[in-house]
Image: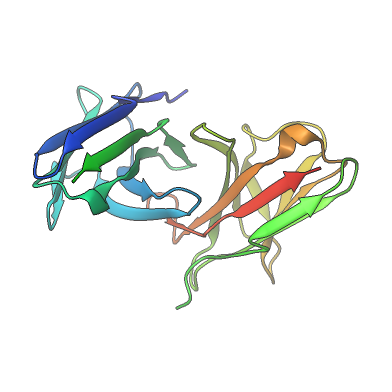
Length: 110
Length: 113
């Protein structure tokens, strides 16, 4: 059974810092890995999708990497802004479903 | 393409009543997933459906909960005889196939009073 862990659970940084969020999973037989953002009381927004054959994906200030063999993914956020404050979730997809980590709650202070 | 639509957005039910949550997937998507998010907790997988079939319901409580995705119409998550512990946000996602990118609805927030 796939287990997904996200570290740290919470992170507070000053505006402008670069930061890394971590996601680890126990079963490397995955189809894809997806990073989402969730704002308080809102739904989930897909940020980046990495297929199992890919190593990384980039969108603007976001870069996500995938190392299937070690069961890890990182989400790198460059030059963080207060508007980046949210909970970031990683989800590991196989052919049946997606399993989520518990998320990292990010606060970017002005 | 309107995206994944969930309704209602907010639902209040008294203990013992039934709750029906609807999810219309994106156009062209035949895979639907339901997740539950309890207050201050992460998203938990409940059930995965394709049209007219339940593929994986390993995350769904055995009693009082059921899900369907008929040939026509939205997917329905049904909770019978709701209890206070059912209060949560219920999210639905859809994808073209099992390995494709998933898109989420805005969720239904169920409050049991």
